[in-house]
Image 1 (cartoon, each protein chain N blue to C red):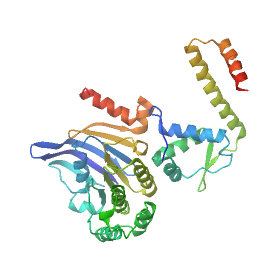
Image 2 (image 1 turned 135 degrees about the vertical axis):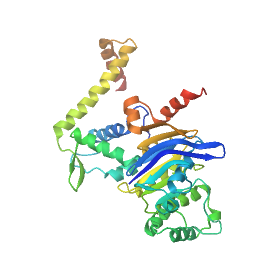
Image 3 (image 1 turned 180 degrees about the vertical axis):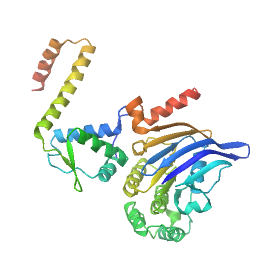
Image 4 (image 1 turned 45 degrees about the horizontal axis):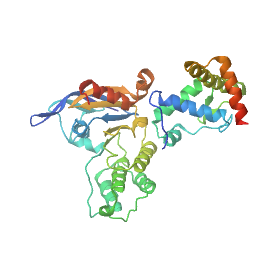
Length: 122
Length: 235
């Protein structure tokens, strides 16, 4: 099993996030077949009803599509995938900026700090 | 298939093991029955299995009242040791199969393989973990609509627990079966559960869908349990 989940967020949503990250990273390619509900449940060590909810949610987001009798596949809509990747980036940056503001670092300072940090990285 | 427990009271001497419990369990779901030792969990499971009967109230499976014969339709894993030491693993499977018409030999063999249990080994020589596994094989290999597990993880190390959780997920037929797990160790099984039911001193003090707890209250089952405990006793 080995999967750990945060305590404050529904497990099905945490699995949604993980699958989306796999797709954004390219570990799952457009058109790839996802494991069956049961396989995924065993793999994650969670209730199959939870995985069913995960797949329903992914389908609602148009990230995957279910083909009758064949299974669940990663959507081949490249535009959508880009959009999802971008919204994940926005989310991360948003929370970063917010936390910097909380410790009294303004926007222009953030940019300067980032530039310096990136410069050091290289 | 549904299990219905209505207004059940059970007394042992002066003590009330169950004090007016009403619950419904539906097929396709996994329930966690949580509570400390002596809370009434085991009594409730035994009642569903037809091994103990209520003093007041009723327990029914698919609309018919539970009787002594019900144990033929319910797979029940007791928290006690249930094997003959002189038997081998193979003997134990053979014996269990002879007792229950719904015993599925193929399932049993697959489970033995998965748990790496050697059929020729004497039960007496098995480690605690392997005894726990063998109990589970004997229970899960039955094709019953109801599976009751009383403390299936107790005394087992985390690796064994993980492998048990996995085989539960693999071998349960969610279309047909309902699974109730009584335990005081919630962490291992939280991601497995549809619903958590908390029993204390013979009464149900909480019942929630695990995902709703997280979604609506931002609580894991463990946090929720702590909250419930906190309401009554200051620890």
